[in-house]
Structures are given as C-alpha cells and as structure tokens.
Amino acid sequence: MAVATGREAVAAVWRIESARIVGALARYTGDFALAEDLAQEALAEALVTWPRDGVPRNPSGWLLTVGRRRAIDAFRRRAIRDDRYAALARELGEGGTATGGPGPEAPDSEPLWDPDQIDDDVLALMFVSCHPVLSREARVALTLRVVGGLTSDEIAKACLVPTATVQARITRAKKTLAAARVPFGVPPENERGARLGSVLNVIYVIFTEGSSATSGSDLIRLDLAGEAQRLARVLAHLMPAEPEVHGLLALLELTAARFPARVDAKGHPVLLEQQNRMRWDRTAIRRGRAALQQAARAGRGLGAYGLQAAIAECHAIADSVDDTDWDRIVLLYEALGRLAPSPIVDLNRAVAVCMAQGPAAALTIVDELDAAAELADSHLLASVRGELLAKLGRRDEARAAFARAIDRCRNDRERALLEGKLAELG
Image (cartoon, rainbow, N blue to C red; front, side):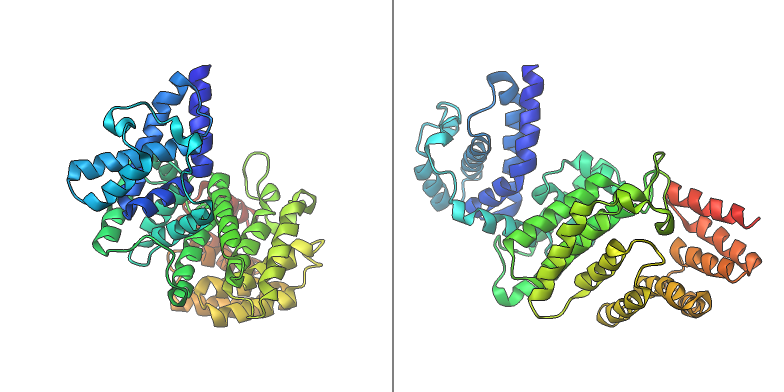
C-alpha cells in the first residue's frame, strides 16, 4: 500500500509541477536539454525513495533539490562550467548527496527558487519547446514531455506512434535546440508575437488530434484534448494581454463542451443535428464565451482562433440546428478564409453555405476544392460531397463519393459512420 501511495504521489506531483521543475533547472543550468535529463533523473529517484521512505513534506522542492544536485554531479563529471558549479555549490552548501552527505529532505528550510520567476520559467519552457527550428512533430512531443509532464509511453499512445519514435523525436529535438544555441528564456517582446504563433499552433494541433483522432478506434482522445486545454489555460494566465491566447482558449473550451454528446454509449459518432444539446457542458460554454469576450476586449480584432471560437459560440448558444445563425457562420468563415486561408476552412464554409443557402450553392464550392486536389488524400471532402449529392437526389454520385471517403478514412468510428450513410442510399 505504501509503495502504491508513494508512486501515486510521485505521479501526482510530477503531473502538476514538472514544468516548473524543468523550467527552474533550465534557468539554473542554462542548458535546456540537461535540465530535462536532470528532472527525469530526479523523477526516477523519487520513484525509488518515496515508496520506501515516505512522501517528503515538500515534494516538488525535493525533486528540484535532487535535480540541482545531479546538475552539480554532471558539471563535475564534465569538468567544465567551473564557475557555475561553484555558484551552485555555494547555494546548496557542501555536505549534500553530491558530496556523500544526507539526503535531500532539507529543501523545506531553504528557498528553492524565486516564486516570482516560476511563471516566467514555464512560459520560457513553452517557447523553447515550440521553437520554430523544430518540426511540428518534435514540438508536439517535446511540449507534451517537458510542459505537460507526460511519459514517452503516454505521448506514444496519444500520438499513435511507437514509444521509440517519441524518444527519438525528443532526443533529436534537444540536439537541434542545442545545435541552434537556442537560449532558455522568454523571447524579447519584439520577437514574441511570431514565436507565440508557434506555441499556439502546437497547442491547437494537440487539441485537434484529441478532438478528432485521425486514426485508431476512438473518435475523441480526452486525455490529449484535456492536456491541450490545460496548456491553453496556463498560457492565458501567463500572457493575459494577448487576445489570440484567449481566442484559442475560447475555441478549445467551446469545442470541448460538445464532447459529451459527440459519441454515444458505444463510442459511435453522433452528428451535430442528432446531438442531445442538454448534454453539452454548460460550464465549459460559459468559460469559452468569457474567454472570447476577453479576446474581443483587446480591441485588435478577433484572430484566426477567435473567429473559429465565434463560430463555435454560434453553435453553443443555439437551441437546435435549425435555430443556428448560419448566415453569421458563413460570414465568419469568409473572414477566416481571408485571414487564414486553407481548404479545410473552405470546406467548412461549404457546409455552412449548405445550411444557409442550400446544397446546390455549397456543391459549387466543394467541386472547386475537388478540382484543386488539395484535399485529395482526405476523406472529409469526399464525405461532404456525398452529403450534398444525397441532398440533391443524385444518389449514384453520392454513393461513389461515400465509397471514396470510406477508402480514405483511417479512423474506425468515422469509417463506420460513412458505411452507414452509404448503406442508407441503398
């Protein structure tokens, strides 16, 4: 029982404090990759020590102290950075575990880090993990590891790739950051806007995969989507004056509010028009609308995330599909298309146009997308085309479109839904 309790405590503390611990170690050592390794070493030691000796009074302080002492060990082994070692050694005092002295229960009596800098550390950690020199896959893996505190196995499960792939991505990411000499810290204000976009994009990518899994047996990955929401809330707390941050948070909250009604008891997808809106999370809707209002109050216009959140809000406040303000949604999609053009935005606009003006007008948009072939590998275009053709009574063409969609779909639940639509056409 004590072993289980100790391990559970390690997991709980790590989940909450890992980003602050890695951030503080990175600030102390000036080496992001080393800090992540040191934090992992401290975690490994806690998994052995806490079940055996009990949970320390200051768990996060215990982990940070072990990490700092491991930093001293590393500096000694490397025989470099003598000045930094001397400074750290003076702070800790000789006689700790690094010199064979008593264990790390001392942190209760000493300030472990400057509390005023904790938030800056986490913010810096986000910016470093999402640095533009890294690939999108590497940013996602590194962010989930160092900011989210997920293990390689958890990240692998979330991203549907082997654990070895995740470990390789993280290792390469750290080497890339080191080779590019990316400093640990929040970028200067004049660079922050461009870098913030990368941070927001990574959080959005994580949420999108959680909201609509591209493959696998589950339509929604709540753990992945929940982690993205948590990261967005942290970022909104750290950067309260940035409207795009609140716009993204609003989008995630309003989208996640529909999760309880998006699948049935067996995990099968439930279309928007068939969802029981009483099951939508009203608290999440209130949080999302509040975040959207905060984004609007900045007076700089809604960005791409804010516009998507405004579209989600239209759905959230409507009593039914028929009562939804589809004309406003079409206008919002047109604005989004000008601000952040993409074939997916055009496809979603086509769906809104269908609801506002009828399937014939929407099919014109979809046929243009089909001719452009930008979504040639996606099942979404063929699926929407099948829907429109079915509404127009062109059943043979609709069957062919749904067959293409089924062939391209990699998610088991979505494929089953498409097969059902094909069967309904006879």
